[in-house]
Image 1 (tube, protein in one colour):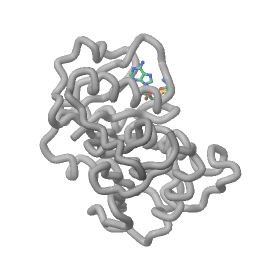
Image 2 (cartoon, rainbow, N blue to C red; image 1 turned 90 degrees about the vertical axis):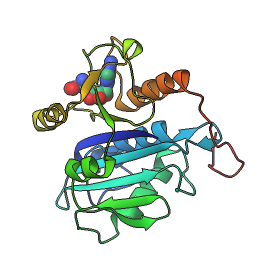
Image 3 (cartoon, rainbow, N blue to C red; image 1 turned 90 degrees about the horizontal axis):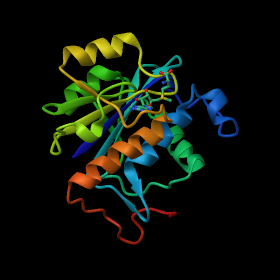
Image 4 (spheres, rainbow, N blue to C red; image 1 turned 30 degrees about the horizontal axis):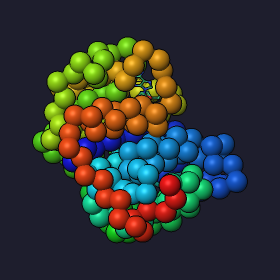
Amino acid sequence: MRRFVIIGHKAHASADFSLVDLAGTSGRIDVLLGCLRAAMLVSHGLRRDAVVYLVLLGGSSAPRTVRVRGDEVSFLRPDERSLAVLMKKVLAAPVSGPGFCRVRPGIAVAGEGIEAVIRDLGACTRYVVEEGSPDIRAANLDLSHPAFFVGDHGGFDEATRTRLRQLGASSVAVGPVSVHAADAVVLVSNELDRRTVHAVDAAPGAAAGS
Ligand SMILES: C[S@@+](CC[C@H](N)C(=O)[O-])C[C@H]1O[C@@H](n2cnc3c(N)ncnc32)[C@H](O)[C@@H]1O
């Protein structure tokens, strides 16, 4: 299983954003949805071995975390609007407790931020994906239980960095240029694909779009 944790420092933890102006009304939840698409969807299919955590730290309902499991989720569309509609429905669920609570097949919500993720991840090797770090190409990656933490449009806050450092996370860069968060997810996924025999579930109907 490959796990991606996206830290949305301002992303709204409630469904109070507008689909007409998603970026302007959601604390940039569009950045997190781009990461979800990048981590979970391939051409004509879902990555069944991927799990994505969207940590939502903005708005009055924060903190909350949405977990999407590729081996359980039944249908994800690749376009931003469809993902935003799905996120609205998921965030409308009245979940506030600290543990993950299933709200749809493969999708669960916790009323907590990064600590819920750390507990849920259990034993794994943590990587902070950050500019200026040692190149992922040269890293001796754990290919069985890796968890990659990715920042939003503003990068990481110091508290998150410190917490991940305490947990022994190592930092990796995906190249010399600062790219969009979703592109960093794609580059990490590609690096894992190159090193593993990776079965993509491309069964017709697993996902819409291409
Ligand atoms: C748009 S970038 C962050 C913006 C900007 N660097 C900042 O911190 O103000 C979003 C996230 O993508 C990831 N990222 C972007 N470029 C990267 C690179 N070259 N190597 C590793 N991670 C990168 C990091 O996780 C980063 O926090």
